[in-house]
Amino acid sequence: MTPPDLMKRFTGTPFEITLGLSGRSIRVETNSQAVAEQLQRSLTPSASRTPDFVLRIVAEFDPDFNLEEDSIIHRLSHDGLSFISLGQKNFLACDQQAREAICFISQNLVTDEQRFHSYVVSALRSLFTESPGASL
Image (cartoon, rainbow, N blue to C red; front, side, top):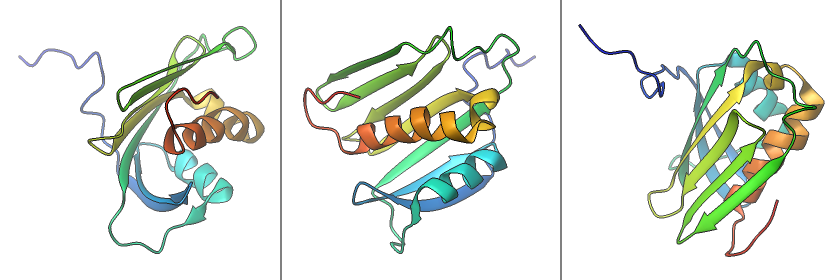
């Protein structure tokens, strides 16, 4: 019997798009067509065939999601590793050396275009334009 994947490491991400973000080509892999569509509306397509980064975004249903209560943003960066939390259960992490990033967000945040842009796209811009000590 296979143990449950509580970290959702093996969640399928069948939707793939390549976008330009802060002068870099980012291949986005996601489990949500809505995420792909939101990003396509917010960012420009990349002409590059070879992405500079791979970003995996997993959108999850969260019945307890309330952005008003969870809107505290925290950011940590050290030695090429960055982490941004958007409330209690939404986060983005990036390894500049490995050129990989991961994001777990609530599906409720994805369906709110204004908040998706304000929180998620802003956090992505911050991750990919990072310099030491940069803030969101």
